[in-house]
Length: 203
Image (tube, rainbow, N blue to C red; front, side, top):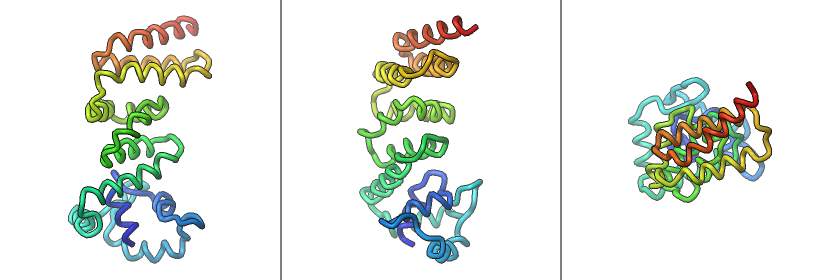
C-alpha cells in the first residue's frame, strides 16, 4: 500500500490502472490483478477518476501521504525519480510528454532533463501541450540562451534518416518558431530556410 500511495503522490495528474500495476512490479512482472484488487478496494473510496487516471479525491489526503511517507526532500525526490525512471522507458506519447520532464524537474535532475527536451519527437509533444512550460524547463536549467545549437544538432540527427518531406518541414518550422520566440534568431533561421526549401520542392 505504501508503494502505491508514494507513486500516486508523485504523479503529476494521477495514474492509470496499467501504470500502477507496472510500477508495483517485481522480478516476476507486474502485480497480479488479484493482489491489486485488495489494494484497490482499500484505496478506491479515497480516489477520484479523471479520464483514465486515478488521483487523490482530496488534497488533504495527498498532504497526509506526504507527511507520512515522503516527509523529507530527499524522499520526495526519490519518489519523483522512481516515476521518471518508469516513464523514461515508455514509448513516446502524450503521457510520457506530460509526466517525464515534469518528474525530472521535480526530482531536481538537471543532468537527464536536457536529453529528453532535445528528443525531437518528445519535444514536439511537449511543445504542443504547453510551449510556455517547455520554455520554463530551459529557464530552470539556465540554458534558455544556449539551447539553440543543441536543438539544431538534435534536429539534424533526427532528420538524417528521413526524406525531406512534410513531416520534416513541419518539425523544422515548429522548432524554428520556438527558437525565434526565445530570441535565438541565428539558430532559428537555418531551420526556417530548410522548411521553406522543402515546401518549395513539394508545392
